[in-house]
Length: 270
Image (cartoon, rainbow, N blue to C red):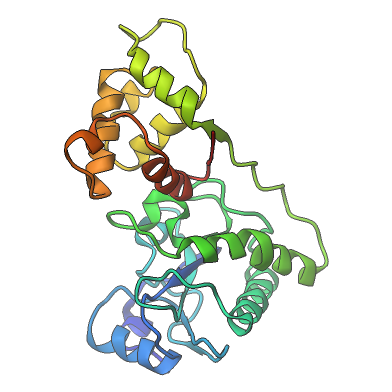
């Protein structure tokens, strides 16, 4: 199922990443192909059905556009991507058949293109990842894939790729930092007067960096202080999650913080 004219007209890439997506529809590979062909120009290289059947639409050394800046790098490197069938809100887990195919494809990409056995540490770092892992991989943010598939990626899929290759990761994936909700709230309510005063809790910087990645806080204001600018940025994040009024006051709550944590690789503790 070769996708035209993209297969012939898109520029060449040197594959250095493998990014996994959920298509937010229970489609087989043929229906995914039809969607790319007829409805959008944001295509992926592969499509994967629930039953493990897989289709390829574009060669892996040709750009596919479903990864935003992952395929717009000036050095010519790019990402191979796969869309996987899911429920309509992309919240269900991959089936065992999908997991098996993701592992097999990941192994092949390592062997064929030398993609290193590590989780991408930033948006341009060679390795393996999933669409929502880095903000630069989506035009305006994404929840794809859902939490269950993110957990499967870390617990089953990526370790399965490493095991099948028979090697060890090129470098261990960085441990996700933990952010204490109670200490974060205390820091937000303290509202230090200015940059340069002692940082009361180091987890503030983790949250600020996530808000910067979401485009809600200037990088120059991510100084480890949960001050007025950070409160305003977090309030904007709460509104983005559908909160309003007193529920969007810029003081973190567990639900909104958990969503931010899932998107930016940190965990929430008490």
